[in-house]
Image 1 (cartoon, rainbow, N blue to C red):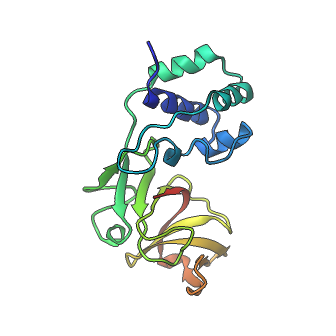
Image 2: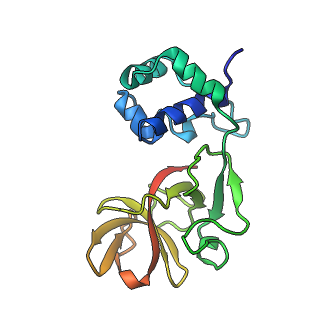
Length: 209
């Protein structure tokens, strides 16, 4: 029986998880463009959004670097269940009460995206404002993972303050008492927040329109 578009991509995601990597990390390891396996590359643009398939060359490269046989990859594809969805919320909403539990994970009523991110600690936010323009524009969707909480200077992050402000920034500096957050847009000055002001901090894994 032929393998479906969803099965092929789910199998690639399963291979990445087995190797302890993200889809972009797996692509890079296989000598491909890091964005080759990103969720944004799995459908074409426009309202029809026709499915895009990974090339046979890219699949062959993945099998070579992971040591998987074609039969093993096909078995992963056939075992793939429904593509999981990811909770989505506007960044302005994310600052309000009722959308996160005590662990900083989604609670209440969120929208759902078709982005195939299966980790229970992942969720998506829709960008508002232009402090990170042109990297992230108003309306873009970012995926973050609350398990990726150990952020380093230079990482692109989302911060939620105890006052309910949620922002996408670049982590410029981290000390025992504070964080300094920068913006891509030079019109926005860096901000320094005391650690006591911060509810949670997480690294941005992926961004797209």
